[in-house]
Image 1 (cartoon, one colour):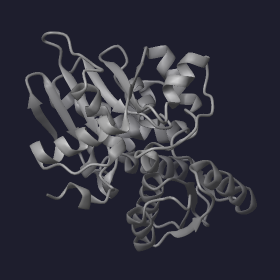
Image 2 (spheres, rainbow, N blue to C red):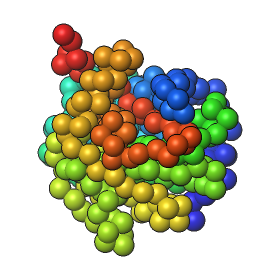
Image 3 (cartoon, helix red, strand yellow):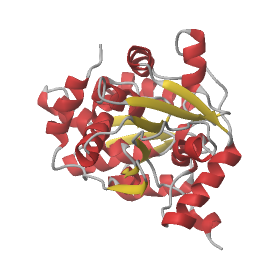
Image 4 (spheres, one colour):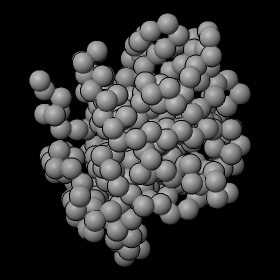
Length: 306
């Protein structure tokens, strides 16, 4: 069972390797955790450092380094952590991965392999490569060390705000949701927000377990997992995580509002969490303290101009 104790251990392990990102008060009882200014532009640097550092501690980090499969952000995070820790990185991405993320991977010195149209294709190729080489596999979202690293966002948030009642989080594969929900278990409620076109958490809760979903829409580059992770499902059920769905249009409006109102540039998937509030899909109770985690900024900002 994945618990908050693993998140606390991760926080101690990755201290000094990641940024403590700021929290901004955005209205009465509303906070935004600006995790999109983390190293590599997303929360995933936390999990990547924790995975590699934990393997090194256990004597399980091979000389030929690490392999990851990613739509973009996880791969960039693994490449960054690998370079910082002095190990090679090989990253498999789908052909649809945004060029801004591929350029980051290349600039960091990672070997980039483009395979297939969706994350699942890149994942299968990466798993085969791991079997052939013995390199350390860094999953995009469904490994205890990855989830624990991501969950350190939740510990920071509670310390910075003095506590909140509810945390809204965009969900793809569920690594961030799982880590945060475990970290704040018994202290805050977590609500997962997903695009209608990629409802991994929603369908898993309906089916009683993770199931494959079709992937599409504007958030596919960052929330494009084809199914929820097993760890995420266990934590969601145990801690009572709710699922809300928003449309691509809702997400686009929330993303634009973050720019217009706060001059914050985020990915479409990141804006899903705020869209739940903007549309009324989530309605806070009077006096409720709510936090939104803005989790990624690897995007082309050109469509925000004007």
